[in-house]
Length: 169
Image (cartoon, rainbow, N blue to C red; front, side, top):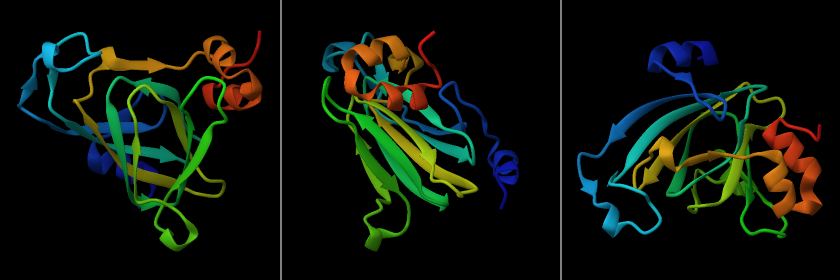
């Protein structure tokens, strides 16, 4: 299938971080705010989405207040870049089906980790799933800003420029 066919088949729409998505599950179980440190209000137990990154697109650097598990489904491999601790070197993880080459079919991004993803060069698209727990809420989503990230990771400004789509102005 083509990316366009997948967008139609699954009813995907543009995501603010890049790519296309559709929520496929939202738990009916609510976690009270008092039981979830760091979250400002009640949250659903878990959510899941389908997420499509066509060639030339990327999931720009962002972070969530919850853990997020990425699941590889279709297409080619994608690179995930993760900025875990201020001043530390970012990690690169490949999500795909070539397990013998060290690719992951599933990968956990811990809460509050700055990260982004993009199809590897030459890949037409990558269709993944993302499961968030406690469940996703846009109030817990923060898109990375170049200036803030450059202060936290001063040795990696060129990489930050690439993954935020911003440059020094």
